[in-house]
Length: 168
Image 1 (cartoon, rainbow, N blue to C red):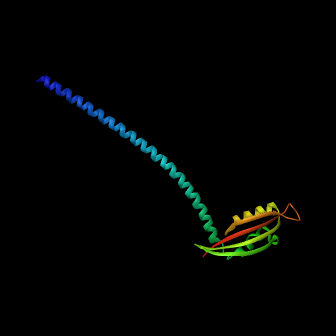
Image 2 (image 1 turned 90 degrees about the horizontal axis):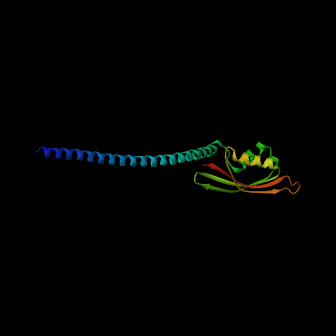
Image 3 (image 1 turned 45 degrees about the vertical axis):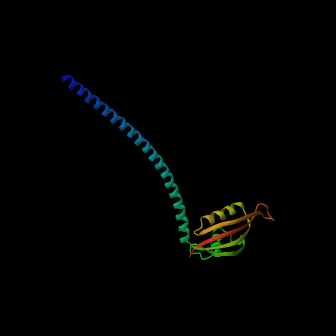
């Protein structure tokens, strides 16, 4: 009888050891799976941070454009041109301003005009483009043609097609 009890004790000890070993194997497997999931989540977090930064950058650009739309109390393309060019001292170099089209778009009205500017220097041309970009209204250059002046090759003649957007 004591032999039988010793055998049962050994059997209980061995089964306890086996259960403990299986438990540790299962725990190690779960920990490794958890680590892989954490790494995958960290990668997703990095991607989300990149997307968040891109979103914030685009939102700032959109807000700046929306702010331009609300700042301007200019009613048409002719007024917009008259506001931009005198501020850089080129009113007398603007030869023609012809309104060419007016379209209703989703949230506003788009007006186009052809503008001819004669005998401007390279620096004045850069100032024109800078002023249009930073004007308190939405002015877009649709087409630009730049040619040398016939009288003075250092000066330029510029033909622009501008678009002016205003909200309804």
